[in-house]
Amino acid sequence: MTRLVLMFVILVSSIAAGQGVEHAPTVAQCQAKQRFLRAEIEESVQDHSAHLPSIHAIREWKQEMSDCESVDPENRHRYQNTESELTVEEKMRMEDFLHHHQLWDKFITADANGER
Image 1 (cartoon, rainbow, N blue to C red):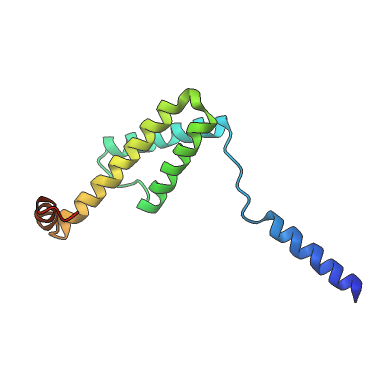
Image 2: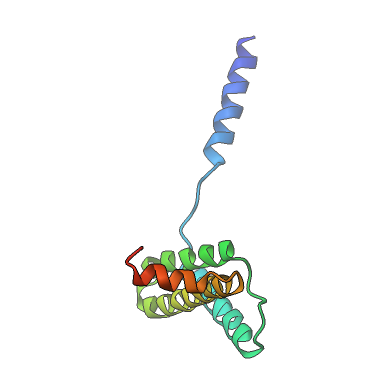
């Protein structure tokens, strides 16, 4: 019985130790991801398509670029630029949503009235 309990404790602790551990990206990973994202953004702009993923994924990409700023400070401006372009995409989608659902005028009126 003691052996069984000991094996159970070892199994549970080894499983728990392997969960939730995130490693910082490497410089090479950051640079490759930044180039990939720039290409995705450029393709979307050139063909006026909505092939970029969901807002959730875009926000994850923005966080990845933010994380890369500290990993690769020499290229901080590239990560910040890519993050900014992703932010523009996010904001454009929100504005399109407001227009599509006839909420833009309500937003403008509320903003003019100081309802922020």
